[in-house]
Length: 42
Image 1 (tube, rainbow, N blue to C red):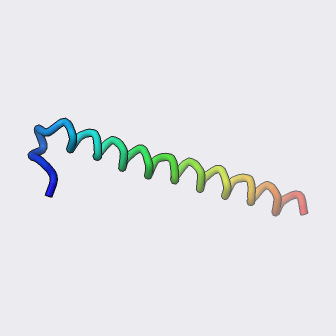
Image 2: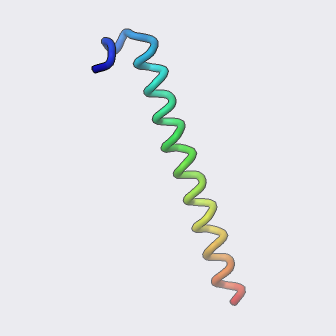
C-alpha cells in the first residue's frame, strides 16, 4: 500500500500519525486532570 520504509512519504505519514496520537494523549490528560480538580473543589 505505502512505499518501502526508505520512502520519505512513509516517514511523513508516520510522523503525522504519531503526532496525532501524541496530541490526543495530551488533550485527554489535560481534560482528565482538570476534571479531577473540578471534582475536588465540589
